[in-house]
Amino acid sequence: MDFTGFFTDLFSELNNDHSWVVIVFLLVAFLIGFITAWIYWRRKWKAVKNELATRTSELSALRVKYDELTRTLELKEADLKKANLEIEELTARVRQLQEEKGQLHGDLHATRLDLEKLNTEKGELLEKEKGYLNQLEDFDTLVLGLKTKNQNLAVQADQDSNALNELAQLQSKYNAVNTKLDAMEKEKAELTEKLNTSMALGVSSEDTDALKSKVDDLETENANLMSQLQNSNALNEAYSDYDALKSKISDLSDENAELKQRLAAMAAAPVVMAASSEETTDDGDGGAEEVSKEEKAAQAQADVKAALGSRIAAATEDQKDDLKMINGVGPFIEKKLNNLGIYTFEQISQFDDELSNQVTDAIEFFPGRIQRDDWVGQAKTLLGKKNAGTLGSKKKLPKANDLKVVEGIGPKIEGLIKAGGINTWAELAAAPVSRLQEILDAAGDRYRIHKPDTWPQQAGLAAEGKWDELEKLQDELDGGKVV
Image 1 (cartoon, rainbow, N blue to C red):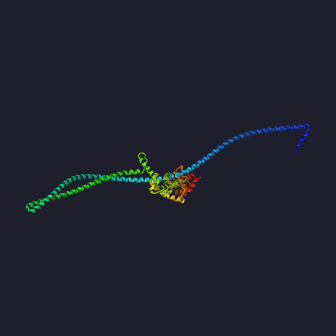
Image 2: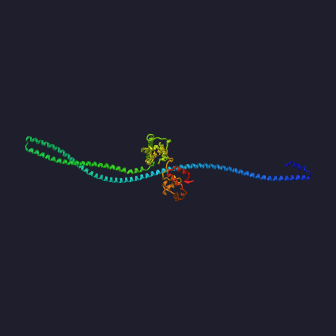
Image 3: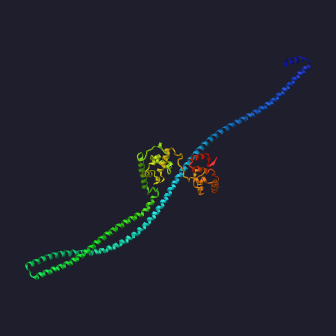
């Protein structure tokens, strides 16, 4: 359509007044329409402008809120990371505490065994003390008998003293008789010589008879003196018997003194033995004993260190084995052994009784504990496994009655289960879950919330020695419950 020609034709025809009226009308209509449109669009524009201002204000508020939410989110994310780190640390701490708990239970079990042994030794000491008391009564009776015997001997000694005085008098008489006998023998010899001389000289028979008579009298008196002398010999024998009796009395006195000493020693022995079975911690009166123990420990430490490289192999910390795998060795004892230079199973396997006692004194351990727990045998077994490459990763296997290896069972729940007649892993593995739940329900609301669904399965793995599978299973559990 050619608009240019149209308008040209239109204006070319406007040659009268009506045409100009139409044009004016059209212009007026155009202006009215334009003004109306302008008013409408101005109102519309103001409404849009107001709405735009409102939306802009809302957008600003939303941006402020967005910034706040962004900051809050960042803080929450930081808190979440921190919480995750704390959870990881707590998880590691829980595992460490579980290991320490197992070690403590092992040490507690060993301590209980030691306590039982001490109680047994205490009973034996009490029995010995009763025996000593009976012996003391026997010794008292013996002492009373000896006192009575001593009194009798004292009386007899008085009597023998009188006899001794009489014997002394008889001894004097014996000496006098003996002297007189010698004189008579001499006189007899002289008379005999005179008799022989008189006979040779032809002396009268009367003189000879007189001499013979005198000789006979001397012989008679001599016989009497000999009889007295024999009686004196009998008294000498009595005197000898008296000396023997005095010697016997002296021996009995010595025996009595020895018995009194033994009696005093026996009376003190129960006290000493009782004192030796208890550990003395008195810093006042027991100072000298403590010093003696310290000196003994220091000497034992020097002896053990001197044995390294000669009686047993020497080792360094780089060659260190996990000595806690030996039953009876905890972290504290292991550290003491390391301080002595003992790091490996090989070294412990080379202990003899003398070195075991020296190590016991050096680490101030229970006497005889190394031999009783058979450290040497255990070390040889672990050394063989180590050399064969079959040494397990489990540091220290718990006892088969330690139900706490099952996740979800603590010391108190373990006590409840054992009170219910379930004492080992095998028994727990064979126990129905319903039976375990009954035990927990009977203990009250505090224990009713625990779920024993996985306990038999865990106990079965422990009983079969499948520690890796048990550890993997427990990693998937949460407090013994399936996550």
